[in-house]
Length: 125
Picture 1 (cartoon, rainbow, N blue to C red):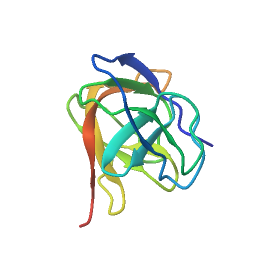
Picture 2 (picture 1 turned 120 degrees about the vertical axis):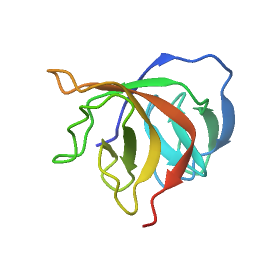
Picture 3 (picture 1 turned 180 degrees about the vertical axis):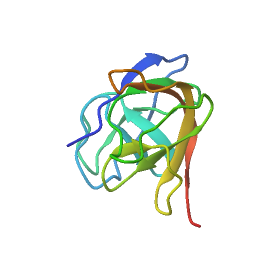
Picture 4 (picture 1 turned 90 degrees about the vertical axis):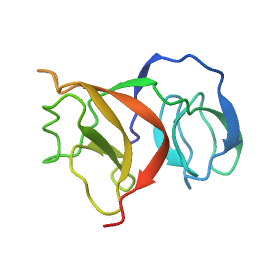
């Protein structure tokens, strides 16, 4: 299942580059594309060029969280992306990417809000 997120704030234009994720992406689907923590601006077929939200500071709301790695109880804590499970985590794990910092702790509906970084950082150790 794809990880669809909802963007609450976008201050700049989008950039166009190739979808190198290896899969088609839906509009507003989050992913790490090249060096960017990106959100598809529209559906983009794998290997084709399309518009992406990459600006740092975009606020993302999601409840697509890795089971067992979803406490998200501390403002400002790091948010990680699991590129295999296509979900967000609060646990630093080798192979995950650092993609942002928590703005709103997990609510009773399991929803978080975080501020997205422009570039994703792969956790290697």
